[in-house]
Amino acid sequence: MTKLVVLTEGQYSVDQSKKFIPFDPAFHDPKDRPASIFVHVQPFLLQTEQDLILFDTGLGYHNEQGELVIHKAIQNAGFDPNEVTKVLMSHLHFDHAGGMVYEKDGSMQLSFPNAYYYIQKEELNFALTHATQSYRLAPLEYLRRSDALVLLDGAGSIDGYIDYEITGGHCPFHQVFKLHTSDGIYFYGGDVLPEAMQVIRRFIAKYDFDGRKCMELRNQFAAQAVVENWKCLMYHDQKNAITSFEIIEDAISIKKPF
Ligand SMILES: [Zn+2]
Image (cartoon, rainbow, N blue to C red; front, side, top):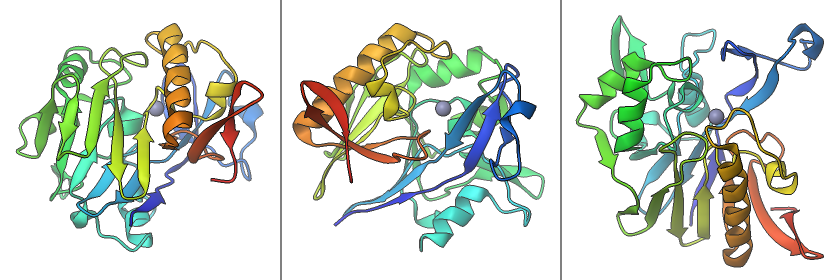
């Protein structure tokens, strides 16, 4: 049996500065955040027979007690961050990679000290050589020198049950993961498949490196999801965190309830 936990880190508004500013609809008015998009952030934790797997690591924000929000969320689900065995990184934009490492007593350390971190080699190279608002260098430099880092090259398989492949689209070396488990297939599409409704509403997003390719990939993956009955993990989707798809009247639809 597998167990899946959604590790909600919260909702944020993001404007051109690409800063993620906490946004709680109960307290904040969207009108006070002009030219912003509103983004939900949620890594996932999956317990399989072999592993405790984390899919991306969130922003790395701390709560008022000074604890990492993602550590607390893992503990609230009955697990310990030290039990995580694999961290699967779709890409290294800081809303996905911010929680990989953290600072404690003035020095940096791995947030998941007993895990291997699986990162595409070219994504790490790209991030380290394209210091923009989307990438934070210090954590990446730290991880680059760590024994925990496992660099993936293109497409392949980890431990015989985790398939990975480069998709590009959202960023040049973005990757996705497909896990074959006793409970069927889990698919983590990162920011190529971040929200279920994006499959239904076909559109080209400005924030993607290659928006047209992303749109095409979303539809390809959703079509495969129907055939193989995938459980898709949606990193930025508050309402449909775990989504399956079906065909209704010749069109791909969100299958409910999961
Ligand atoms: Zn993202």
